[in-house]
Image 1: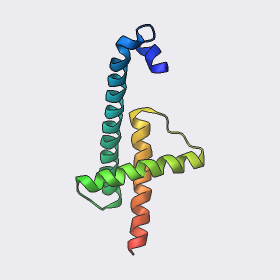
Image 2 (image 1 turned 90 degrees about the horizontal axis):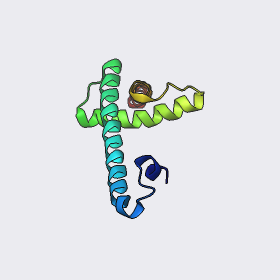
Image 3 (image 1 turned 180 degrees about the vertical axis):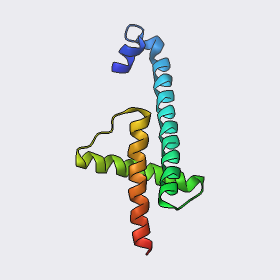
Image 4 (image 1 turned 180 degrees about the horizontal axis):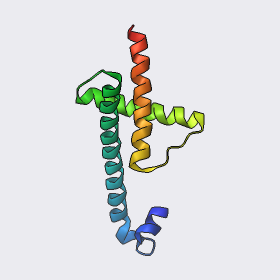
Amino acid sequence: MRARAVLGCESHYTVCESTCKNRARRERQIEILWFLLIGTVAGWMAGMIMGSRGELIGNIIVGVIGAVLGGYLLGMAGVALGGGLVGSLLTALIGAVVLLFMVGLIRK
């Protein structure tokens, strides 16, 4: 309901219903792309920091899992790095570094 009010579709619901759905779908797709891009950069940076350089797919996987792990760990610690690109990148980077560290311990 909020999306319709923001997009000005509340009075023209039947006319704007498909437009609102398309816009919401497009926004979700862009969010997923940003998540993957931030994960890729965070995975690459974590690999550089930890000395384990991987390929693109490996960086994406490490960065995405690291973003989830970083969000969980920082949330449990009560730390908020803020929203936006920088906060998301730092959260993902911290999680990716922790993930690579744990993988390194397991491999030894």
